[in-house]
Image (cartoon, rainbow, N blue to C red; front, side, top):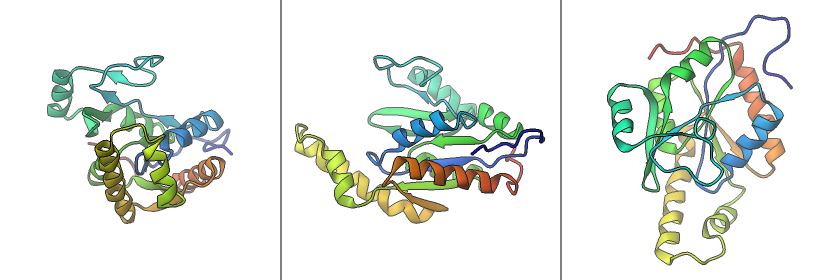
Length: 203
């Protein structure tokens, strides 16, 4: 399946946002999607956290310090931003708008607060919520091997319940029972919106 048809001029694409509770498998879905559909452009987030082993600046994240992040917020250079696990993450605005103008399918994998900001800034965006098959499955993923502090685990589970309750704010909910199936359904959603998507907001 391809989001662009050979020999035709590129269409304006609608921005697609993928969000959901921590531990639901967003990163796994996106990695599979990028491997099978390289035509989809995923924004590289900017973050204040330090690189982890194996991470490449500009490929996995754009790394910056707190002052640089503050300046990006003040300058309106971020489409959205949020704090997670003590660090801030954001989506650079300019590359997203440029890709949309060129007709490229654009995907953002972001947290709930960031998705809400995108909804306000770009109402034409398609918001997709990735949900677990059940609470039990998600709780098992979040508690891991049970080696972490009980307070940390309890905080993580409480946050997940809040995130799950936000599903009704999204346009579509996909249940993550099978990564391949979720990817194909997500691509189908992006493709069906492509022809009817309005021009991106000039923000």
